[in-house]
Length: 112
Length: 113
Picture 1 (cartoon, chains in turn cyan, red):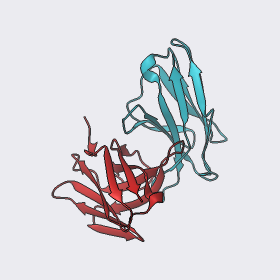
Picture 2: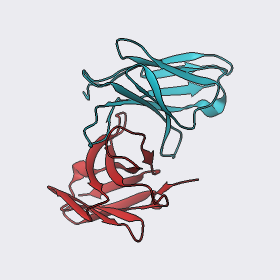
Picture 3: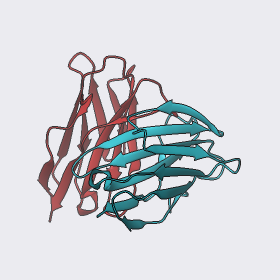
């Protein structure tokens, strides 16, 4: 158990729908990152939040949004889902240790 | 625009031998590099890192080499063990610590008994 909790582990939904992925960071970590891993691809950075505020943005579609709440958990909202959104979505958290992130086990999203 | 590339999707190595995983990058602003290991159904776990001020960092059986002029890094695992079978991701950032990482596509390493 890495200490980063992601729910749900699996999600199957239809095109056009909206889903919410949830992430609880490790205790004490203020930064939360979201990454997308499509089939045979590396992890693509989506967005970072630090202590409730958006800190950095990557290749995140306008149909996607995220937020970090006062208790530091984060949610990634995906709307108007398309088949191509099927992927593994990872959340990670960190403090500035220079040793990279701690990842959760991911949410596998399947859009049918 | 793939700034971090792992050109070998897979690698098979005999147990006890050396495994060498390679990674190339294009962004000269990258100054911190990491390797992550990923087992199925788990998230990536941090393995080893190196700052651009060094050319080698060692941690037990794992050594990362950085060649800045060639924009190339490699991960050496000696000796390879069956438990090392996993997907290995190379990642880079332009600031040490909690900033966004740019990942390669991963290399699937299989250690054969």
